[in-house]
Image 1 (cartoon, one colour):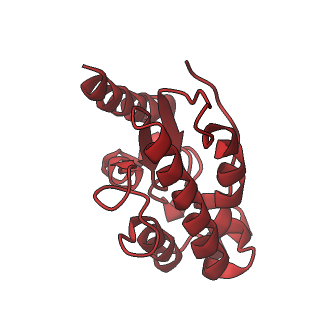
Image 2 (cartoon, rainbow, N blue to C red):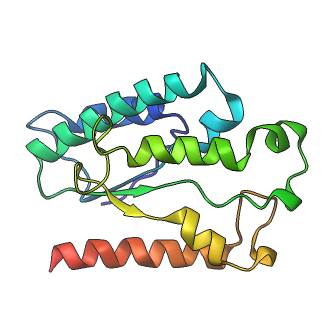
Length: 166
């Protein structure tokens, strides 16, 4: 069973996952989560707000995992930014290497956040590395990539699911 929910902020993803936390819930077999680009771009409260949102989100993911251990959680970190292709002033100002690394470090935090393996149930599909290896022609606008890149990420995600479902 599959569904898509637009939840660009950690708090949005936290809310979107609420129905699956109950013991009698029927969550999807695979949940793919990603959150950071909107936080970096819009800087609503800075990285501290992101940390707090990620703490809540990861606690909910771990609770769902405890109640429904068959659910596979995949975490997509942010894509690599191709600065030469950025046009909008806010993106040029906010999508710096320093900001991107800071938000990525929050996601990978094994002590406080515990979203991704080994401290959390999420399996990281490293979109940052995958997109950094793609030719820059595959990047449309500095942060979005063309279909072939996303197809590769989808294939990796489905391979992860298949390996668990065997």
